[in-house]
Length: 446
Image 1 (spheres, rainbow, N blue to C red):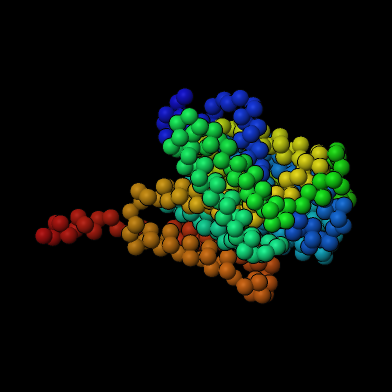
Image 2 (cartoon, one colour):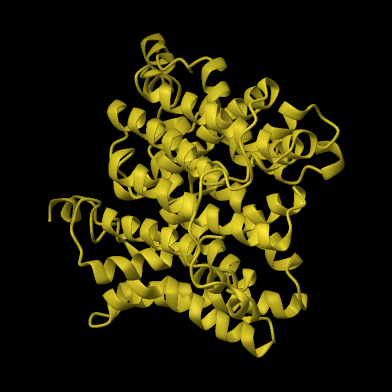
């Protein structure tokens, strides 16, 4: 197993075959560890959808995520990346829907998705832009930023979740502690080591959910009311309405999402030790665009690669694409069987975010691996440090300030990852390279 031997941090490489039963178990862990339903719930609330339409909307987002994952993993980026609803366009979609209606929402999603695909092929502009503007210094910084920008959301969700705050913190702590324990057992225990590492996430979810049930924070009543089967349809929320301003707005949002998802690709590339060459980058843009386009046809929102899955790969040390393909299939099944998707949404958010915090740590550490061999001179310190500072500043930005800025600024500031990534890219371009000949000049002078 060539990839296995070359990368000691991964037990099973991206192209290595695993049996489908193991792939399904690993894929289920990826799905369970993602808060896929949170963004759709927020969007549905902002668009004032009815209860039945909200449930259907969540299903369609599951379906869109599954289709987009298969497109990206099999024919697009060809790396183990799970797609899910992006948080970046929430404000824009709410504004478009509130002003122009649901038809304009989905009418604005289709053209922008195609434009993103065209940047990959036939234009081939995307890979050129990445290779020119994102060297390892920027790429590693972006990975660190991705992890840091996600950490506060885990804590915030724990503190603001329904129920007693003390109980929520305890549930999150138990979930995280179980995950860390099984990760460490996976490294030390010989006989059961592989089992503990492969199942660490799902065991943490199960034990965390059982812990939450002792405090009365697990409610499966929605499962009883959910239907067993539901077929998708094209444009379930009405015919698309193509408004130029809405289309331009969403095209800009797609570009921001593309910056964000490129950070995820860097994370996955680093974790799996896979090169992001020009061909792969352009295919990734095509996969991103087509996945968003197809998802929009069924009533889903823009999809993006989830960094949390890179963290899961770092934890389980299994990068096989079969696991991610299984995750895509599971997501499609959840989109077709409402009763199953209802079960997923019953896992307490405190459990998910307790685990998610550890995943963020894994992401940050992989970013540090990329930049660990880079000389930290004054210039590079600014290129790395200032974006991190701006990312944190964006995360803690008060809502009243965010709502007072122009819409296009609001869209950027809504994503700490986007702000940090753009800052790293710009600083690397505008700050002059530090003169490497200074030491030699001193030596000749003496």
